[in-house]
Length: 242
Image (cartoon, rainbow, N blue to C red; front, top):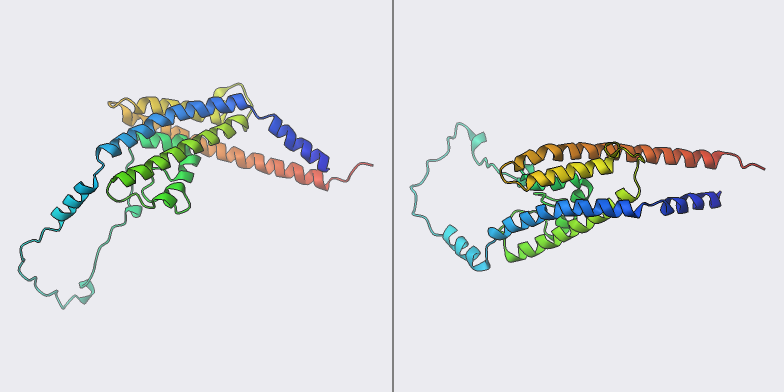
């Protein structure tokens, strides 16, 4: 039984399609890299130096003229006294540029692990560990951390598509019937449209389709895992032939 299991494992590793994996990894990196560089350029454009931040802070703390005292709150409504309203960026619906949407939809697992461009990334993600929340001024230190996050995303994308391309869940000659190839095609379409300033918002449509295709891929992954578990269980429970 142990020899049979080892044969399955070695056969699976030997069946890895390295050429297909490298091809999908290269295509998706070529699609994501321009989007990542565009976001870096936009951040660099509005990045503030330390002197500019200090000058802005000094302007914000200029003493204001004394205002007349405000009247006492209405005693008839004590429940309204002392009420404060706070806003958390994590609870607000963020509107991402089409370039960000294209990468987030086409490389959903990698983006989730890295927390790329998330307003409030998870603490366990790469962005959460390196920087935490994205709120704050764009300083040179902020930009340096962002470059590390971008580099981590590129690494995750390469590994993700190398594995997805090397171990396809569906073996078919029809490209649209394979989730990996279909997502790559949607990513290429979304990336090409997102590079055109006039119609870049249209990239959200193929990006949405890519995101739905990821749900298809995850469903297939769960189904394949259940099938593999069932085969291994029945093989283990099957009495050995004499």
